Image (cartoon, rainbow, N blue to C red):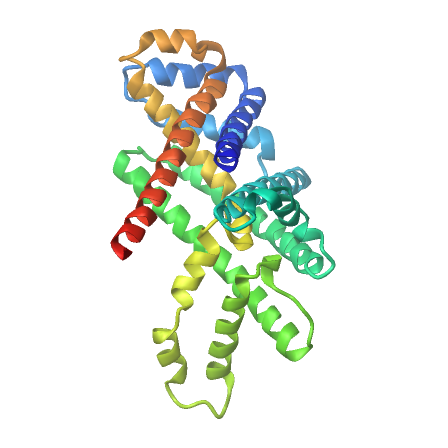
Amino acid sequence: MTELLSSIAWIWGVTAGTFVFLNTVASVASKKAAYEFIISKSIDVPRLPQIALEIFERIFGRKHLSFRCLFTSIIASLVAISLWYIFHAIISVYAQKGTPGFENEYSNLIWDELSYPFLKETSSSFGVSVAVNLFLDYFALLKTRLLIKLLEKTRPSILLGTIFVAFDFVFSFALFQCFYLFLYLVSVTAIFGGGKFFLPAADPYGFYMTIEVFILSTFLLSPTAQKGAFSKFLANSHVVSLTLIVTLVPITITSVFFYASLMPSIWLWLFLLAASLSRVLAPIYPWAIRALDFEHNAIRTLGYLLSILLSLLWLGFIGAVKLYFFALLHLAT
């Protein structure tokens, strides 16, 4: 129960805290525009991307190739990596619940997770991965900047918004894999060529990907490899499923860096989602709009509502996972 409450507290704190910060950064005009969008009955959808762009530029500046944008991006990346690592630690400890001696080793498990990046054996791998992610996040930030400007010039709809989200996620995923393919090749060279330990993100699960890359690169580059061996191994290997698991499942450290690189896009889509939902609910519950101080602090209030929504979704997800494994155990017996 402690781990579940900790994960909900993380979701609530990070979501609400971010929107409180955005509310502080946003101009009075942007807050007023957000409020007017929520209560307005006219179709004025382009106003939302305009608000998002104004807040974005107040944080990162108007020019991407500037010291301000670079410095702010580095700070944001370090904060995002730290927050996602805490979430990873919570999930990792939660995943061990039910194992023998869990209650007695609870504090040691937490300490092991939090101290892992600073161990002598893992600190260099983790540090290199942080440095690579700083560059990756700066590039991903440019993608978000361009995406907001593109949204500003279009007339968004549910279908178009879904397409934008899907494209944004797929592009971000592919970009991340390009960077990590390079790191896996470095890992192969370091481990099998130099006898030195290096794993991308210092992730133990990443070793499986390193082995896959080693085998694939051998088939691709070795002059003695049989013709078609590379494509046959690729078709029958687990590289696709491993890539998805290592990148997306929060129990892996690699996922920490992926979700950190996705943070600008995550907050953009959450802001648009929260504002759109509030616009739908405003005519139904007008008293809530007045009670929650939408008029003066619309962006902050959006964060509170979004925190509740995400917490409920997370509880539903955890419940569904538990029900799934319960059903599997029941069928097995």
